[in-house]
Amino acid sequence: MIDAGQGIVEVAAAFGISILRVQRRLKLANVAPSLIDLFRQNGITLDQLMALAITDDHAQQVAVWEGASDWQRAPQRLRAALTNEEIDAATHPLGRFVGLAAYEAAGGSVRRDLFSEVDGAGYMTDVGLVERLAMDKLRAVAEGLAQEGWAWTEIRTRIDYSELSALGRAPMIRREPTAAETAGLAAVQAQRDALQQEYELLEASVESDDGEVDDARWQEIDDALEHVQASRQALESSLDVPDPSVLGIAGAMVTVDSNGMLDIRRGLIRPEDRKKHVASRTHQPATLDRESTNGEQLTTKGAFPERLYRQLTAHRTAALQLAVAKQPTVGVALLAWRLAAQVFYAEEAVRQERTVQLRIDQSPLERDAPDLPTSPARQQFEAFRAAWTDRLPTHDKTDALLAWMLAADASTLCELIAFCTACTLDDTNSGPDRNPRDIAAEIARVTELDMADWWTATKESFLGAVPKATIIEAVVEARGAEATNPLKAMKRDALVAEAERLLADTRWLPTPLR
Image (cartoon, rainbow, N blue to C red; front, top):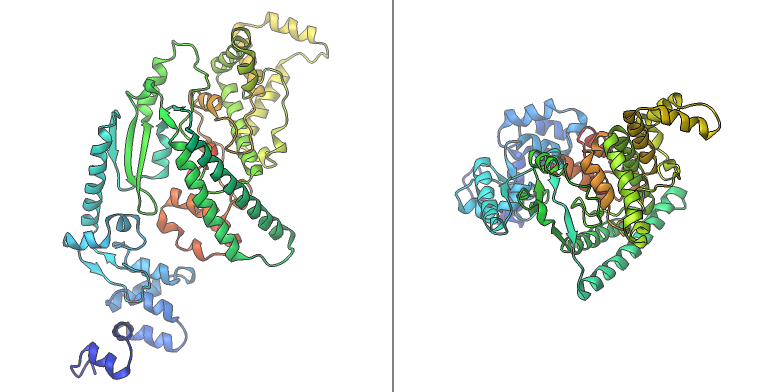
């Protein structure tokens, strides 16, 4: 009928079907004949054929199909291969941020996907125009931020996790919450506790193989936990204000997050400014006080079970111990600070600070992190211990040790004091409700500790203990939203394995380790 000169409307009326159905059938009929023959032989599925129909170029359709291995022939991968230089208006962060209407109003052309069930679906073919429109929106926001008094502002359409992790955070001072804010935090915490309890019951059911798990309910809890944690994070973030001492170097960055939403990061410090700031403070006494934090609250969009918090913070403690052992001046400063605090300050304040413990308890961190023996930080620290064991007297009595120390030079004593002080560090905790990591953050900042050097996300270390939504969020942060498309349809074991592969070498860290 079309070849005879009739229109799509007449065809739809003749067969009693919708115009869209006619358009889709005509689109399929225009796929390369060799691929249609393959479809008739059950060598290609209808979904794969529809994905290839995104373009009318037969040669390109065939080339993409024949050049793809079996695992690359999923419909979404075929479609991505044919539109790799275009922006999906429905799923790409910039596409969602700019919006199809604004893009078309600016004169942009769109390749429509007739087989998409998503509202506003289409591929923006002018990537340069999308970038310009996004930058214009970001620039308008940045101009408003400049009025807040930040030392600098920067706009980016996208920032890699590795770039963001290289930036420092301005120390934040926690203000007292209002009565309404306190009530709001308590309500959110009650919701989180109830959801977390149900999540752990479902998790225990999986581990014990008691029966089928309600996947739909598990997903509902995942979504609810994500919403609750986001609410909690927003409430807590509103209580933090930057330390005035760093406002002269701290700035703000405006970018687009993985969901296509505006993302404003305030209180960022560039590495070169951070070094200058630290250098300018070296002549001052160590400021290991309760008002100093690293600007990253111990909260996360995903739900972390209590045992995972303890496992992660045990790894952080091991790395902190190694960092202090390697820098004797820091170890001596910590020792002097802890002694002076007990001599000159209120007993209650001293008792509340538990990060640096002068009594040599040396509780095994392995009780909270069974995987700690495989940690490079732990292995290096134990090598330090073995080296000192070889250097010190082997006598059972401590008078021999005292004689050895009285004969040692100042440099040797400083190194030994640093190592012993490092052994007292313990910042393991079981969740975001403990006092903020102010002391640990200050030690990490002074020693320039980066946990990405000592920890990697694996099934054992993280991925096996968090909800699916948290895993996907991690991959989005590290790799971008496009990398998560194949993950969403995977079962949990496959999802964890693929996420572990995607996160390898990205230096991604969960919030408690940042």
